[in-house]
Length: 380
Ligand code: SF4
Image 1 (cartoon, rainbow, N blue to C red):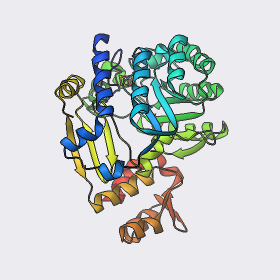
Image 2: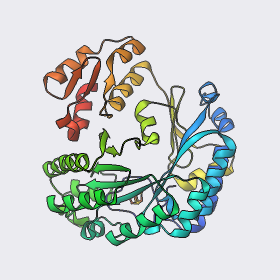
Image 3: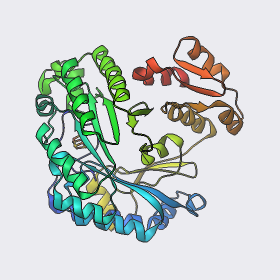
């Protein structure tokens, strides 16, 4: 759902601020893509019929953007279309929701439609940081939204925080972590602020400007320290760190996210949605208006399609697998891909970037905050 109320300064997603009159045609187009996905793939020469033959869905994820902005009847319509199209196996059904958009009436419809997990982008509990980042919610909205979700029957809540927002300090970061832990969500994601030209804030930082509080973002060293503080706080609060950016209470690891890192098949519907099945990766056009127009013309606007080579698939096994703190099973990968990996791993292990124990290789615990640099070395 590529729609938001405003554009956060750090956002590098393809989302737009549009009139709510555009939501219904968009949802209609997505429902059509879901219903007729097999025909659309065939027309676009994405050959996944064998991979999809016996597909059973155990995870649905409605993300954005801000899908909680939609009329809840739209969410019900999407989930109803999914159930009418695919075989289901007790799916985890996640809806992304921003705190200020959560209301009791909406939450009741979400739950009746099958939503059983809500993921909230909180980012911070400090209003000064939220204001500077262009977020619409404030700390008070978080305390209002949490009880609404619980009262509606949501037993699986995920909260996101961002380390590196403008004005963030070691003390304010600890405050956000403490307040989050007190609310006891089942799942937590902590992301480091990304500085790139894809966001207004990132571009301003790269150009040395001062708009969007660009001169008030913490240093890279501070961000790395914030990440380590999060590791300590969340461990002490009973969370299991299972992926570079994700922590969960036992049994609440995100099924949806695990599929990406384990390279299990998934289908994405909607503008900018990515899919992976049968060795194919493909993505729909990002522009919501182009997407709707194409669906009205009975075609799927696929703008990227890659049939993975064995080398590319192996690279994915390595960098997606190593995102998980459990590490990767080297023997299995060597067998599956007929390769020897010692020459890739040994130099990095000597530098203290990777750790090997038996047939398992994992990122060194103290290198998690610089994982991208390790992956660049690994795939060099
Ligand atoms: S709510 Fe999320 S998707 Fe929307 S602008 Fe903000 S960061 Fe981007």
